[in-house]
Length: 207
Image (cartoon, rainbow, N blue to C red; front, side, top):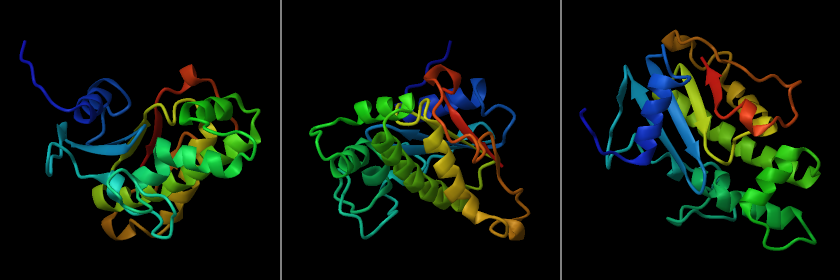
């Protein structure tokens, strides 16, 4: 059996393409969220490698140049700074007045349980930033489907819905010139509540 060594982002994106929700699509974009943010574009079954074994460093895309937080590479307002665990913990520290040193995992769990309004507010804000990132990536790669994976998003439908609403600002005219179908999604505004982790291990936006 042939063996190929590659980075974890490429490997899990290929797995999702061939064995998950990416099947049957020619243009598949995988966005992984955790400590940082990364993406891989799969085109006709092959990863698009631009430099350093990646499809580009989407974590360095600037979402808000006026943000007060920077990523590990000192890029102020980058996608990684705002959407990664650093962004979650920054917002938690800002919104919670009596709880100190709340880690991202705790906020995600609280939001998933649906009982902590502040945690839900934090994750909605993260979803807002994610939507802007997806909008930027969409007009670069023109994906048919976007998979959003990682511990940050697993099981939090409110997060996904907020991202979708921002992404939908691209329509109705953003892709008409290129004859690309407008986006549809598995999420609707009425589904603005958390769901159990095991029900949605991967979120997807189809085009």
